[in-house]
Length: 429
Image (tube, rainbow, N blue to C red):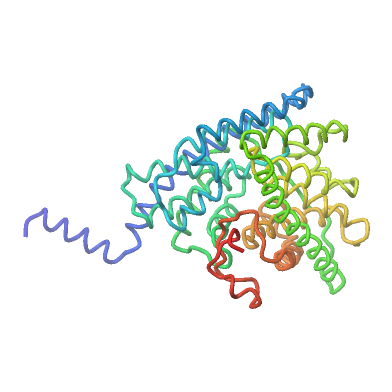
């Protein structure tokens, strides 16, 4: 046997002893590329968001231009971006059945659309943008790397993990969210290694660019007993009803915009008028943009009981009309301020109720309870985990079969009464 044959035989023998090694090496390399791309994109996006938010708050007259900004976003998507307008639902479709490579312009358009939305005073978040940028950028790797359909599914899941983890600074929650959100009740464990690896790397890269994340804390955690457990369940019921109302309303209002205004670009124009007038009548900008200052306040002091309702209404109008952004940060706002309001009659600490609402409304609106539990642990610490778990699981159950993602497939129903819905997506219900 020649030296060349011996070397080949030794290599073959080595890999036969460690059969997972080729898979690990392959996806470690791909995850490194995803993490670098997505982490850098998230950092640029977060820095841009901070800049335009500060610019808007220093020049409040910009809010009067929200209708014109909406028209610009509407025209951009109508004439150049119809194939990427589905946003997160397009990502979900490609996880279930990959087709053509997700166009790179998805990242460009959603970035521009979100920056415009925040600059001129729309009420929106950032998760949708981060996920779409991540999916679009990462899917460009699929052809050069000659990935199969199954590998592309794993790639997109890993990209979503990286996008979520890096934009919120919660890589573990980002990975679980990506594995959990595309099909309720079932997780794609074949993507578990690249999802976690890509999310952790992306978060590290975002930090290297010195992009800042918001820090929260829960310091008042009572001893668990039957009474506090009951209060947690009651609050979870309220959070679940709120999440269901949000999910149903955003789809209903979106349908009204589409049915009443046939020209798509005019929908965000009309929505912009309504939101701008509402902000003027309210006399405050606390309900537009991300609303992070109010979220932070909800952990420390009593706020008006109606804060969550106003934020919900403005977010639904903004996104249903066709502005770009995301639902998650507004859901954080809605949940935290609803928890703050519940403190008026539920005798649990204010910051604990705010934190429970923060994760519970999001969990119920997206059907991702495990990701949201990890999110709470990463953001607030493990001491509050039992209260968070009780509230968000209750919220998840009481929200019914609803979702902000219409293409999210029902893998396993929440209970047997909905068994006939398995295999359908929420658009079909």
